[in-house]
Length: 226
Image 1 (tube, rainbow, N blue to C red):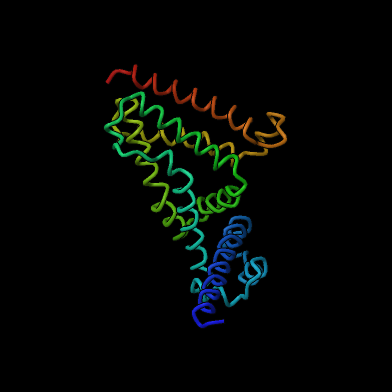
Image 2 (cartoon, rainbow, N blue to C red; image 1 turned 45 degrees about the horizontal axis):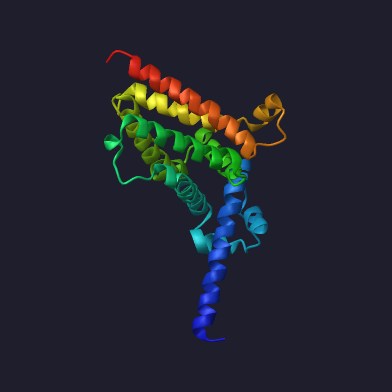
């Protein structure tokens, strides 16, 4: 094998090891907490040498930050299509802005509620709500804050409200939170709905109800005196 081929193979193995460590770290940090998730357990579950954590990330804290970056990148990718558009939100007509919000809801349901990959992400994010660290700041700044700011501007185009107002920020957080509930309280939802799981059919039922709520709130805001 040539030196060039050997180097490429090494880089491929290194990338695979790094990805495996992030995947397992994300799962165990969320399930057990940062302190309880040992580097030995993470490395074993990832099929890697424990020294690989220091080699690839500089240590356990570096791995946690890499997990946070992965969360931010995954969320951006999952919602990229719904967040797209050459026109800035302010240039959208109210019907077009409402349609964009409905697309965002559908994309969130498809990823956060339906995708199995979202479970580890949800646990990691939830853990950071109760035990915030530098990782929280990474995924907040890398995904949540810019995503919410854009949703607020789209909301303003749909309703005529001020994009920076308390009401707009709360209304959009409530809209996003309504979708998140179906992941965070998944077992409650399954029991109350007598669903074995949440697949495409169940997701469509959720989408229909959440979008109906969206339309009702938009109509109420547009009727309210300015």
